[in-house]
Length: 451
Image 1: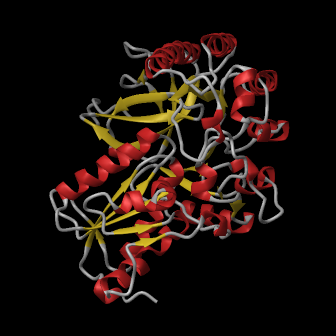
Image 2: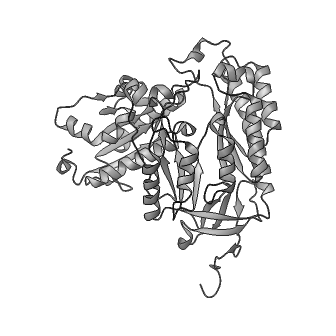
Image 3: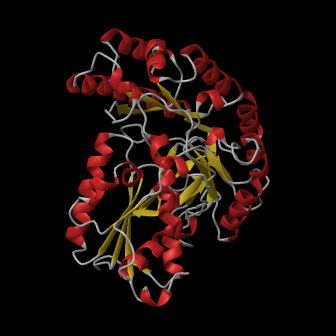
């Protein structure tokens, strides 16, 4: 049991790197600390405790984590710095050696951070506290609750896939999940506190059910009838786990958005085999075609990795040609990063950093073209936009159900509210629809005399 008296009147700062799952977890952790009397640090203050939730998906992610820790130490010179997350789990000694780190806590123990801090302060704890990944069997729930419009609900953790380039199974452990009943309860709580949109997060969410014997499609059906939530989004889901039933369900559901994020990783069947992925390009294409056959306006984001070991110039061209011919809305492009302990290190040849950059730039240009084309295709259509709290000057923004960004004049009462909007005017670079007053059905004109 934590002694809350030692934390009373303390302040804390939180830093999250990496995925939406990390964001959900650090938000839940912040709530725990708040319940013990630890206040979130205000702008201009220095914190007593700094908690860094790290990512380790690439070598660059590790580097960014180290840089963040050093920057935090400069901003909060007297703070007690705790580092947790995937980088801490994979390389605890390396993290502990970074100047300014006081405590290292593993991925599956991050929700018990207060206990480790208390123990350390009482001279009873160790600097490094990491449970071996093979012993990670418990699903630790979390759901973000802060000033963002969207909430992130963790439904699954861990991965059993062991792709040749990836260390996530070593950082997150085996696939495991919460129960449908508990996740529905969390969604109901989000509705009760005024949340309107929930993003389902996890490491491999389509693998939901490994520990409870339930099915992902049944989770979606149960969430779809939660009163008070206007919109759900499914975060990244493996193509082999994105079943026809799931696609059809989203197409006809009450609340699930026509928006998918699907990792392809390579458009070359040869490279997919080197990566140990569980599908080929023909299968992937069939999934995209299925989605568009029932949801023509669906937003589809695709992950792709360039410069994988063994990816020759010819094999990369196969990826570029495959993606050029494939309908989608946006690419998320990553450069392959060497990760110790992975099977990919046995593959030859190695792609040079220069070639990785050139290939990345080529696909980013293709992504920009595809996104502009998708946005143009939405012109003249009407959608419901969920406007966010964030304000930029006299403007605010939000997203349609199919993830088109909309910019509008700032009105505080629009924040966290759905408004019907007709998409007419694109900005100059065709990345946002701009709403000129009055353009939104149900909105009042802030420039009119009665306002």
